[in-house]
Image (cartoon, rainbow, N blue to C red; front, top):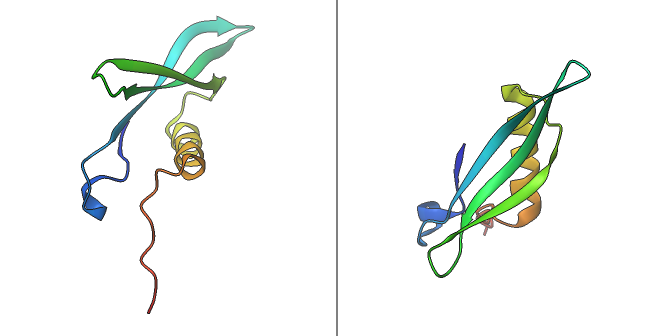
Length: 83
């Protein structure tokens, strides 16, 4: 999943965030997963960020966990204030 954080919607350069759900086999019949993110460093290289294990391998669980990460990391666009 790629997330534009916050990007062109607020008139800044794009800061794309790449989230992946990695599969590591099974343990006791249940899938073992790792939610990770690849981000760009200032020097252009990539950094791997671990967001925790055991996210269920379904779209709803993956999307919900990514949404929580985005909301708590401060990468949501600022809401326009009503004036």
